[in-house]
Length: 443
Ligand code: ATP
Ligand code: MG
Image (cartoon, rainbow, N blue to C red):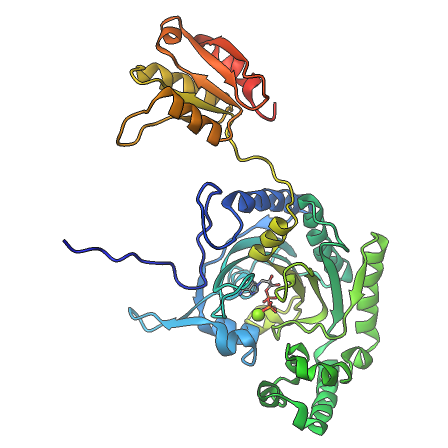
């Protein structure tokens, strides 16, 4: 007999599992994911953002043109392949903004005015997997397209803050806001020339990657995580000193808006972000509780991207949030979430006729109750004792006991499992729709 070999998920790509499934790696449960999704829907509706979804696979050229050729993502992190059926060059999306902008341009979506949208889903980057860094990870992505004013930069940042509050994260303690301004391209060019001159004078202290980027993308050297280069980077010319009046005014207006709502921030002149498309405001929400994977959310303004991808020039601002990192943080902080347990667990002693039981459970569910029916495996339904064990383990607050005698009387026994009383009450099967409400956890 041949033994079939087990298959495993691709390295760095995780299954998201219910809490009841034990796993070796400490990863957030599917209940945590749902907790997050509920909060996201609530908060984004509050700000009037509309839901949208774009494909996971896009033409490779979209990311090369959109993100910039000399970026970590495009240089070494993209899952790109040729479609063997037609020769198309395709890429699993490494981020969401380029796809959103492609769709906005393709559908002329700004024709009737600006657009506030959000999306979420898997992103793919070929990185070294570690805690908080995966090859398939998920992002929440929030974008405001067609708005030029600093008020919308602030709005985008406040959407994230509202989400922290909804989830129970404390700003300033669990997550902190860092902001910077990248100015406009002419200002960046001047700064870039000054940077190149500065790094040229200190060539010997640059690592290989920095030397390679010295003339192609010196700004990215500032983003280097190499500890040996930190002092050099610290003393490099600051972009802020090259910003003109309009850029400074925009930045000041964003800051004023944040101050008006009492949101504390830190201006980090070294914050440059990984993509080429940003201008003016950039920001990150960071945490100290996840080791080196401390950036939970990052974004900024990208006024040139729509035109760069073939659309009519229009400004835009947005952010991407790493859902795994946020959920790891939530687990770390033990943030409370609603119980995933069902309201009731139906116990059916061996021999019970099932059709009347199923009919009552359907009535209870229609009335809004969540009910799990004990169902047997290959060995049948199992003893009352083993069924009660299952009921306990399910976390349900009530057991519904469908004994033969009760059924014959048109009744079911409801036993409290969680309040310590063990109280038992009989209810009429015919009135199930009425007493269902009394068993609901959040009633
Ligand atoms: P990092 O500097 O940590 O690599 P990044 O600048 O590449 O992050 P962005 O492109 O700004 O990340 O993506 C937005 C967010 O998505 C990040 O702040 C992070 O929370 C999350 N993220 C990015 N890459 C990964 C990954 N490989 N695994 C899990 N989350 C990720
Ligand atoms: Mg990265």
